[in-house]
Amino acid sequence: SCFAPELSVTDLSTQYNHIVLAKNLHTCLVSSVIINLNVSFRRTQSLHGPSPVTTFGPKACMLQNPHAVMHIQDPASQRLTWNKPPKSVLVIKKIRDATLLQPFKELCIFLTEVKNMIVYVEKKVLEDPAISGDENFGAITKKFCTFREDLDDISNRVDFIICLGGDGTLLYASSLFQESVPPVMAFHLGSLGFLTPFKFDTYQSQVTQIIEGNAAIVLRSRLKVRVLKENWEKKARVDEKGIILTNGDIENSRKVVQYQVLNEVVVDRGPSSYLSNVDLFLDGHLITTVQGDGVIVSTPTGSTAYAVAAGASMIHPNVPAIMITPICPHSLSFRPIVVPAGVELKIMLSRDARNTAWVSFDGRKRQEICHGDSITITTSCFPVPSICFRDPVNDWFESLAQCLHWNVRKKQNYLSSEDEEF
Image (cartoon, rainbow, N blue to C red; front, top):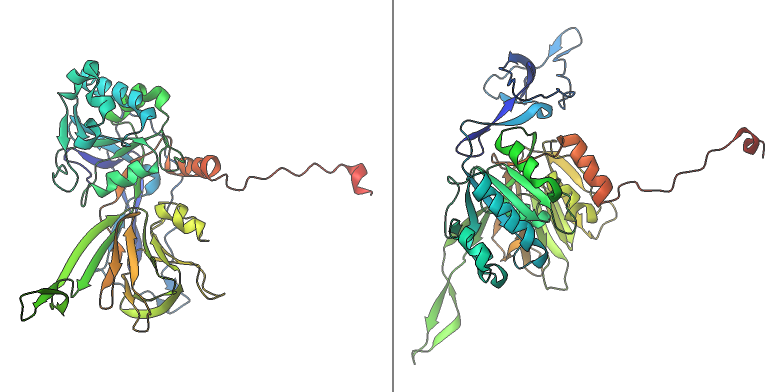
């Protein structure tokens, strides 16, 4: 529950339930915590279900296993607190978007001049001619700390993140942190804005509230993905004349790469015209073979992205789960399924597959999957603490209504007593 060097989650209710989850144990613990009197916060109804009764009839009961106990804080009362006042902020802006130049400049001036914050900005953002050519803004940019993606590690330097743009900026922010993620405040300045609840009109008061530690958060779970490539290096063969042959023998070696994914892992057939044919394992057991255009493995946050377009249900981000959604399966009975967050999924190319498959992670790092390669997916222990505009439930339904127009329909007219006679 620590997301930055000086940040943690606090529960501001006088009491909360630790729901103890285990395969063979369900108990409930109650603990008291210190109230932060500087923040007025009314506790909402618990988002946890009631602790189940563990006795069944006169003689049966649940076998207790104290070695498999996990404590989960009630999501309805998750709020931020600063161990020390925040000093640094990472500002993420969509690259070369002219509509974001003025909000970006206003925000950076406010953070540096008014709030005396250390501002981190990606180097390629400042290389935009519209920014580098602005002499008036040049004095501010000299105060920035810059970094480059995949080259500079800023994981222990940033206290919180501000995103300017659409949902893609939040996904990009997640990709920059492979372990603990600072809290993210996302402003809706893009096209869809499902994950960006804040409007920029009142940014000064909203940012000030965050710096003062007055904010609710939703912990958006991520997927830890491990890609194992078998025989990934080719050892070149040289003929008698010293000419290097490209179709050389394959060197027996392995390559392992790991990713943190906020939305989804997509395995598809790529440029091939054949069906993809991949085996899906759950905790080491083969559960099915996906024959179709591909399969989507998504978090609850990702359930409202590509997965919902492929026919999946929408899952609230506080629900601990992983969703598996086929893409155009060649079967009338292959429906999307939801599995517990604690399982381990593994995807491999089937022996009978006619072609390779391709995989991408939140739409990035696309790569080919060949025979013998494997993709292992589990729930990460490093979520993205997304700052709420109001609270996790209201923000989510507001996004469903405003962005996806969920259940929009012209209302049926009232039927009077006279009309009923006809």
